[in-house]
Length: 226
Image 1 (tube, rainbow, N blue to C red):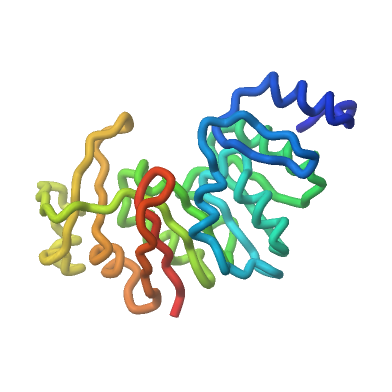
Image 2: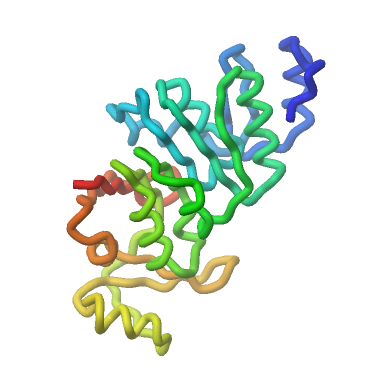
């Protein structure tokens, strides 16, 4: 947490200068964290979203940009999770500076069901790094009360096949024969990118899917409970 003695703008600026940042975050006092990612660019996809009185979960929150934004939009409860403890400490410190009540937890994606049900979920550039994309989408479906904004890599029109029993079961039981799946090589290994059709298969008739175009890093979609 932020040292309580850092109360002046100059002290906070010194603290910011001593940190390494990924997200560029502008604070109410005019100070800006010098991150390499202009997180504000994603806000264009959130135009019109009503967060007043809503519960919001930011999966992979990093230093808390979207949590801070959501709370300032009137969200009743805002929760951010990440696996990077240093980023979470930055997020908690920024929330303290902005005097905002935000919950931050060190959790993996697989633990989101422990946090309960959320009206709105942000999941930006996270699913693309998860090997069990089908299981992750199922889990996301189960905790989304109203709407989830997801930035992820979507498949190109090529069908890849695998000897994996889980894969084959999905093809046979869930009807992926006419869908598109793509395998990508990443630093974390081989990852699957599904098409919108595959995502629709997984989410079922409970959700509608909207494609919004190219996001900050990958494709931006939203899924909304019908």
